[in-house]
Length: 94
Image (tube, rainbow, N blue to C red; front, top):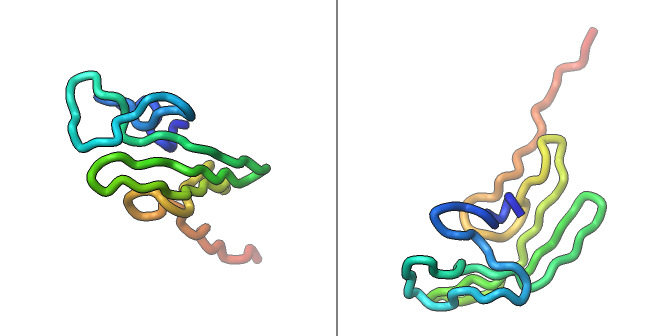
């Protein structure tokens, strides 16, 4: 949940399944998060989540995280650029 910003301050990043969330654009002190986890599926090295995003552009989105040699990284969905980068190429040793 750290990659989703679950406990980001000053406001919580995402509500858990079934928790209340703010589906509107109105944000007030102690407002619930504007995102909510709808469902998820986890495998050995991949997690796919369905997330609701509130606001004027209310929508749901599939977000994928993969376990890489750098740790868990978002590989699809969500706001901003995808964070997975290719592994550096290492020259063969003589």
